[in-house]
Amino acid sequence: MNISESLRNSSAGPKNLRGAELDDTDRLILRLLQDDAKLPNNAIAAAAGIAASTCHARIRSLQERGIIRGYHADVDPAAVGRGLQALISIRLQAHARANLTRFEEYLAELPAVEGIFFVTGDRDFLIHVAVPDSAALRELVASNLSVRPEVAGTSTAVLFDYVRPGTVRPED
Amino acid sequence: MNISESLRNSSAGPKNLRGAELDDTDRLILRLLQDDAKLPNNAIAAAAGIAASTCHARIRSLQERGIIRGYHADVDPAAVGRGLQALISIRLQAHARANLTRFEEYLAELPAVEGIFFVTGDRDFLIHVAVPDSAALRELVASNLSVRPEVAGTSTAVLFDYVRPGTVRPED
DNA sequence: CCTCCTTCGCGAATGATCTTCGATTCTATT
DNA sequence: AATAGAATCGAAGATCATTCGCGAAGGAGG
Image 1 (cartoon, rainbow over the protein chains, first blue to last red):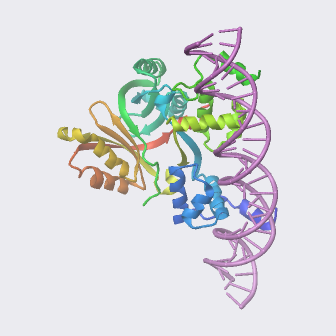
Image 2 (cartoon, each protein chain N blue to C red):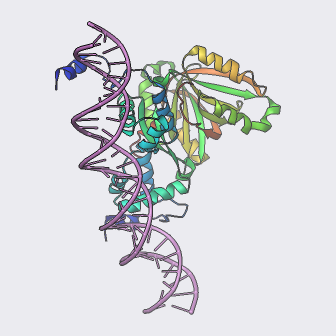
Image 3 (tube, each protein chain N blue to C red):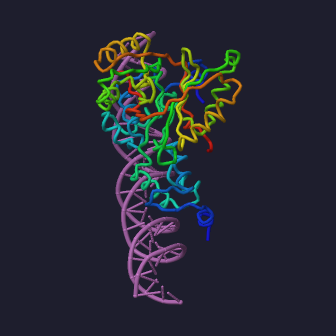
């Protein structure tokens, strides 16, 4: 390790290859990878008008800075035996609101849970679940939610459809 | 005989590659790719105890059957200038419920929209949005939702947190 | 029981892609 | 103008994806 490296490492700021701000090229890269994570690096580089090695370095920097949090396959829930989706709003007991994180972690462990919204207002949580059928939905609410001492009440709404458009686009 | 043969023989379900049913190997592949879409094919093959070419054929089959719908990068919304998330429930005018699909497509076009829940009950839609700040949230509701003739009313709840646990789930 | 036929799995070869590296160019500062 | 730090580039080598022919397993029908 040389002097400049030790100076960088000793500084309290994030060890960015570049500054914290994103330029237009970064935003383009993010948009392309959100749309299709399998897009080859050289195709992204061509679209951005930069060299492949430069594009690769930028993508790695985005990952190391936590801007790209990961890459995930989008699997059809119905194809894996989860044909029914629902939103369940959960009210907690007032005294249980000290351990919100614990309950959130419990929810995250449930296999049916696809998303957890920790929301302001009269409710505490809104969870998005995918289950095989209505019997499994009832079983989930009865045996995994209502029995919990923290839970004051639940309200379930079945989903007709759920769409996730192109995912998060950089502000434009 | 090898390990994979005995595993397949011990499982009761059908093992069609072209058929509609998924066997244990398919489910393992799906789980691994959901967790990390960048996982190399040969690593998946090793984890499943099958040859790389066989694994590749199975993954392609899963894609062609629409079970794997795509691969997407997970981008931190706060890093791209969308530090505020909210859930907006939308009630439609009764006469506007004939063109639900049209309105859903309109919502999908909005850059701030991350997810659209088409829900049963007293509300019609619940949309998950990510915006830069509260001013942008107010602007979104006022200029993109309330002004639409189909919209009878909206109700907005700011999110403290949103977690998608499907990405880190170790097992079913 | 035998043969045909389909489906699936396998290893090897080839082409594409990823990843690293040293050198060059750019930019901000002195 | 000179310097230092950062970003870019092209090329090389390692890794990976994809295709292909072949063989084994399981049914269907004779």
